[in-house]
Image 1 (cartoon, rainbow, N blue to C red):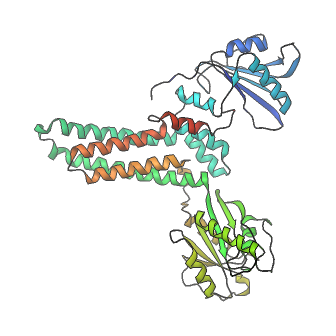
Image 2: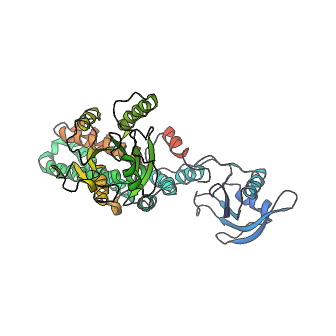
Length: 447
């Protein structure tokens, strides 16, 4: 990736989270950092040494006391001169110190601008930059570990290795195109096919790992549906480990969708308890059932709750007829404590539990993970975003097209080029400017 110089102006922002805390950090980056440090502190601190000092305002009154650390370009997060002021974490004092920095010539940083400058100055690639945001936003330990792997460049190196293999294959194909009179085809055709098969296999493994990382990042949406009073709210409370939804013996108690995020083995899941489906004259309950249908359309998995005491209820079959046909579904027979002799016909598509006693809830959790696509490979998962998955899937399609066009060398070479372009977009080696703006605009201000 060609080095691109970032904007020459100096930016500043509060780098710690909003609210009160023991320590608050102001980060300043740009060519004017040295002059700003001298104006604020009276001197430029030695590079990479913490200096305890006072932070005065324009009249010389002390705003705060703390540590100043100067990072000389290019040995800094952004690749520019960076000054960090570490003081007390009060909202008012941080704002006063930030305003003082702005009055000395800095401007307020845009969202994600520090990380964008790091990318533009070749300190990190685009996938690593997104790893910064994903690490900050991670809600589970598994997600944090996968985000750190991406931040450390493991995802990028895997993609770069794929690109390198594609380049080697393209060189071979171009040689076969440029020197047909040398009769290279019979010698190199098998080599070409073997390299294409190996790249396709490696790409498939990378996509599988990225899909696991995407699940860690985004989570999966689970819709609890069924007749009234089959225990949907009780099951939600059981899975969540706390009283989230109101439980009552009165049918139709749940009138609206109740959402709760839970974790199973480090995978975030968004559980949605919906209104029971039945014929009703209650306008409010009918509105709740309408929202149930909307929720089902957005789910990644549907748990159809049935009464274990009524395993062949026609009303359950009527609900199944209303479910989206393209979504996985697990039939969950609740209230097993009242019907211990229940026999299941297909253990892969149904399970019997008791939300009251907790019986088989662990098995239910594992089934949910399996049905949403989790393969328990967190140690090899890359924290991936939708654009990463799209790029990998498009590269797969181009390699498949190349396989079909092996007897048409020009088309074969073009499909390889398109696959390389898709993979290069992941790390930012090929990225339109509007994509960069969209990515970095979603960062917090101080990054």
